[in-house]
Length: 130
Image 1 (cartoon, helix red, strand yellow):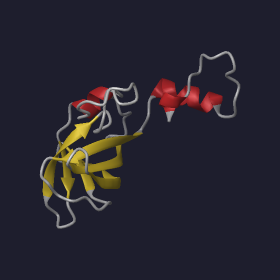
Image 2 (cartoon, rainbow, N blue to C red; image 1 turned 180 degrees about the vertical axis):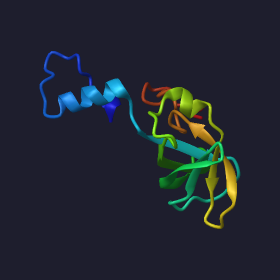
Image 3 (spheres, rainbow, N blue to C red; image 1 turned 90 degrees about the vertical axis):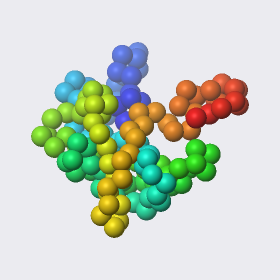
Image 4 (cartoon, rainbow, N blue to C red; image 1 turned 135 degrees about the horizontal axis):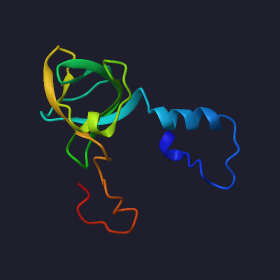
């Protein structure tokens, strides 16, 4: 939730301010990411998330996105070396989702929402949202 806190605002005195400032400075060790499987498989939850052949987390929330026509999963990942997770680390990986029958399916990392990633619909543009 670091993205939701603006530390430079005039009214910036709140419980936990120092902890959030320290976390922003050092980076996060756990990150919520979105993935979509490249094969048309259903996701049920608790599937392993693999990045470059190393298990880095598990799918925690998932559903079939009827508008986008595929399953969408969200899960927390951690760096296998205990380092902080950077955007470069997220973008440079090759992801797979291990299904419940232990088959690994290639997956696409989604840094933004799968449906309407540019927030066009919020702005009144109801054209193509994918």
